[in-house]
Image (cartoon, rainbow over all chains, first blue to last red; front, side):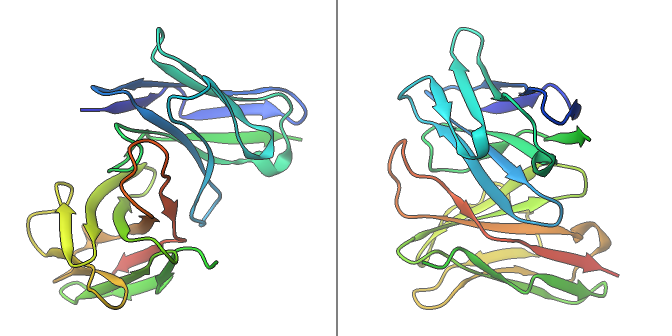
Length: 113
Length: 116
């Protein structure tokens, strides 16, 4: 069985400062890990995914995440926040990358002007 | 290449009515997944289908909910005798094949069901 814990339900950062959204996972198999973003009343957009290749994964819009097996973490970072980054972010785990996804409860990112 | 399409985008039903949600996967995708998002929560897996087959329905409520993905046409999620607790956003995702690690699920815009 797999599970995901997003450690912060809300994160607020000032525009231009770094973003850190934390995620820990549990999986019985070598996991595939994803970050999705959901803007208000919109669908989900894939930011990035880890599938057992490079541990540092670069995604769209300047986001990246690092897979740390020893810490069972997959934190999402961005060097400089932009107002358009305000959204809900979901960390997601799947045992093989293409079966039912298990979502975290989400982190709401607020950007302060 | 059009993305995953869902319709309707918004659906209002009275208690006891039926709701039918449709999902057309991306071109070339043969796998469809349905997820439900309750207010202020993450998405929860409901069912995984391939053409004419239900592969995994472990997340489907035992009663009133059914899903199909016929040989021709969109996948349908059907909710009979809706209750207020069914109010949620229902998302469909599709993927091309059951590759072990590389495929990604692409999500549609969702159908927001409101039960009055």
